[in-house]
Length: 339
Image 1 (tube, helix red, strand yellow):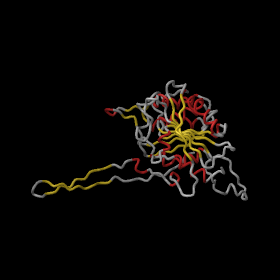
Image 2 (image 1 turned 45 degrees about the vertical axis):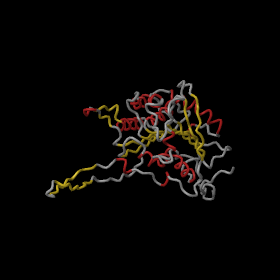
Image 3 (image 1 turned 120 degrees about the horizontal axis):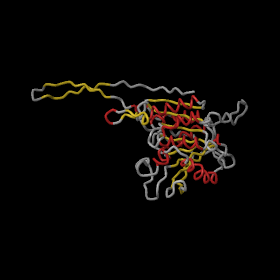
Image 4 (image 1 turned 180 degrees about the vertical axis):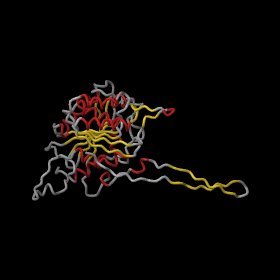
């Protein structure tokens, strides 16, 4: 199955410029072609914005966990607690890599708003959200909207882009225990989702691939399944391995990094769009529950942010539902839990 999301096209336009040509007052008319920015077509919709009357979840933190998997590093994370959360009821879980970017109130995703709105309307289950940053040493700068995502000054590249099980161990062995201690999170892996953008997306896929008994839903935006640290190997791994019980939504853009280097030399292992399509085909051939959407976007979160609500609906589409017309609870919005 795939979601067909319409893309509005913007034609190139010519801008006539009149330039003075000498003291005689003659003018020359020039016409230049200016291409539209591929990201200009994507913007956040109502599901990604706060609305009056929708109970607003709380973001708690920052919290810090020390890493034994990557000695000397630590991971900062924040926890989104929906207004509907009750400690008496096991809840779902969604973990986002590069957490600072996903929770940025002025950013391209604003995942907490999406969860507020979709939980309220019963379009996804009540869920705890976790926004975790890549590991860093205490002396290194924390990734942030101003400081950057961490490439070059944190452990992001090693953790996220290396196709092994080490980052999966960070999530399952170091992050999950304090979460289970603080919140009533379901132990059912079908109730656990994980996602990210770019290197954070391949990291999310790696966690579910290596630990399908802990995470079964993957949200991948412009995933770096390329040769940064060997991440192009996953299509072959998918085809060579027994099918795993994971569900995956991939999205990328035709104007993502396309592997064309200096002098025009092409390297398919560094072509983000090509490698995302390769992974989609491998997952499809193997019979995975996979969905995908290809936009016109560049590398980044413009397209993924715009369609995040649809990605979340699809990933979490099989939650329990009542068809009883007299079920007044099912037919009402989810209000805030009683304290």
